[in-house]
Picture 1 (cartoon, rainbow, N blue to C red):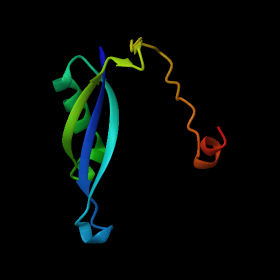
Picture 2 (picture 1 turned 120 degrees about the horizontal axis):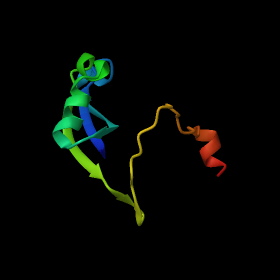
Picture 3 (picture 1 turned 90 degrees about the horizontal axis):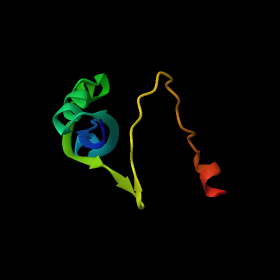
Length: 89
């Protein structure tokens, strides 16, 4: 299992009359890029906003550290640092 960052684009008609393309990144685990693509395509948000995929990147290492995914029965979320919290770091 590999970690993938899927970079998606979409046009939000509530912002600037929909002329500007917005982007977000989804992170997903998959056997290969095709599997990651299928998982992102199945997301309700992706479908509702008529998103498209601009690119897929396999993330295998970060700053000299190898990324290894280990299956877990517990869904734990990492800490999200707000603007104020991150500015104080």
